[in-house]
Length: 430
Length: 150
Image (cartoon, rainbow over all chains, first blue to last red):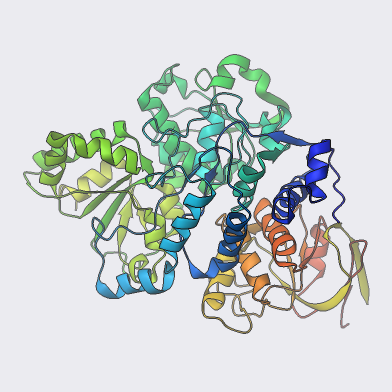
């Protein structure tokens, strides 16, 4: 029997002794062992639903599906409904050639339907709960300040910690589900006050608001998993978390989490903990990283071009990794229309896929006027995970462009800024 | 010549084996997915960005590395490798174990009854001292002996 290092309650000890059955024992033992490795002193009660990173039924993960079966047969499910990352395919809106489709359906994600049934049985909110941006208003998995979470999707973790001031570590896949099943998370790292202190001061000294995806990339590459305290950004974003500011921080955070391993950032004068505690969040021996226009350019120029033919014409453009908010979706519609008008075109020169959460998609599609406008440009709206789509070798080797630094990092997609994307897809740029 | 290093025991065990060394972060998904999907009897490193382990056998070896990196599915891939009896015999970290690998070795032990002997915090000198092909022995207390041929 496992002897925990952390202090457990009487009830937790009893569960570890098997009082609630073998599966519940194993679930709790997994969580306790995980906490012990990272020096957790105790378990904390979760007070909000979990968010899972694993949304794809890839046969390789059969042992994970076996765990799901065991949980289901033991009658275990999460106390609160949970959300999960986006689905890996959307053949209706993201077309792909038949061979690629067969690879998706017969090989890569052959267990997708079975896995989705399992997810529903262990507590998935509903059939629409597939989005990496689960914290969007329409999706509704929105923790409050101080809530104890166990999330695994890196872009969601950094948003919840930084913008919402909830508390989650960057959990390993499946461990977050087991935390949800047990209702517990080990107290260490970003769950503790000390773990939320900044080891880096970032001084933003650019002449204008830097591209969120590039600023996040620069910060992530420099601080890796440490907490940065960002100064000078509220000069551009203001001191209130408006929809535009939240969208900016969503994309900046996702880039910092994928180009590094940032789980929490503070923005001076803007994010909740920075507004309350100010520079007392900064550790005494914190280092400083100055980001000016030259540094942003240096970061941008450091990205390797992975395309076999660097001169290839883009065949597809993904916008929305992480998923777009409703605010962003309408913003891109306006920009695409303006870009087409400026270049005297009626249809986009490169197929564009705008990706968003199913709940946001439903709201947008219900606005028939906006939907008609989008369809007129030729852009498609999808709820797919572009990253999972690009994991198919038959799709991933195509010349795909994106404004997402996360997608650039994990696939062969080529990064462009938002303005450059508009220029390319609207035919106004060479 | 034998050099010894002491680390922290994550999953306990006593064994001997041959080292395969990644001096950079080991991407579990990129390194192991291809041969696991192909149901190969031995998983060989398939991460083209990691020349240290590319095309080298990982199954049944003692994997020495700083930490694992990459997708948060990495832990699940490690668990899958263990369940298929294709995992490394042991994993030795020069640094603190990362959350992805920790998840993987825990899932393998608790849910699949597979022990991937794991020791972390062995230090940078350990990773400098060990080379792929070296014979290693691991003690129950987390001591690792590197047996050099010369």
